Length: 347
Image 1: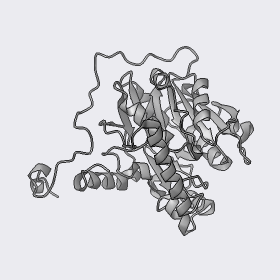
Image 2: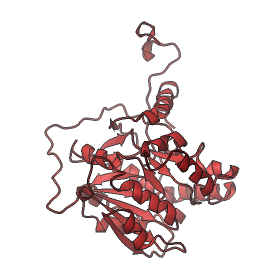
Image 3: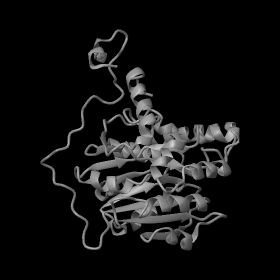
Image 4: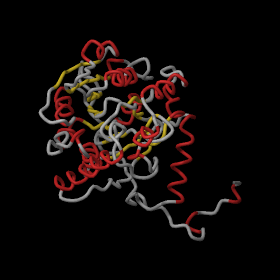
């Protein structure tokens, strides 16, 4: 389309201006104090990774969080806190600590089958000025995640940084599993892009996850790499222990909403980075048949309503898009833009 052919959306027939977000634009208060620097020997960032019954996937996730895969940072800038809930197939400290030099490993036992206790325990161990939660240990990340989190942190004292989510494969894994997708098929995809040589090639073999399906320009439901200043983590008191459904139910959606809806928070989306879910037979991503999985999801929504007194709705506070977009993410840019232009209503 040439410049002369462009017609503003508000002047096109049958096009309604987008209203996916609350219309207030985010404002970075230039008078606010910048985040306090990390103290001597204190990492700027603690990443809490929760692991359960997925040693191979977790090992790859840790590798993706480590240097030199992570670019523009050194190991002393951050720590990776691995909290592994007891399972029949453990990762263990030797494999976890061999994957990265800045790993601190903790085995954890919990009376209920959720990641909530492990996540909160990890938050208590964190030494960083900022605390990030990866509640699902099977989610690899792209190479600019850590550097961009640390850069976005400098935007203000209450910045909350979220990384969008993707599933490896040609369709979301809960659907792909019904067509025979499994760990062997995924290994072939990873080999085909030469992972981990260029982590941005994960975009070449992935689709948006269900909770990020609306793209970068509309509200998302959660993030599987969500980073908060320490004082906001403490104000929120971590994850809510009332969520006791298998896998935590919708506790991660709840934590995301509480963080974004905090009156002082400024949400930042790292649109050129991503978390990429590896297949491992999870509760809602392929480990159960369709009817059983739907019953689990329905139960999680019912639990959310019992805990919060109302059904879940994604936060609509407008986010700041931060970072650079790799070439491999261009198809997702096109998808996100088309959704924003042609389907402006909220999901």
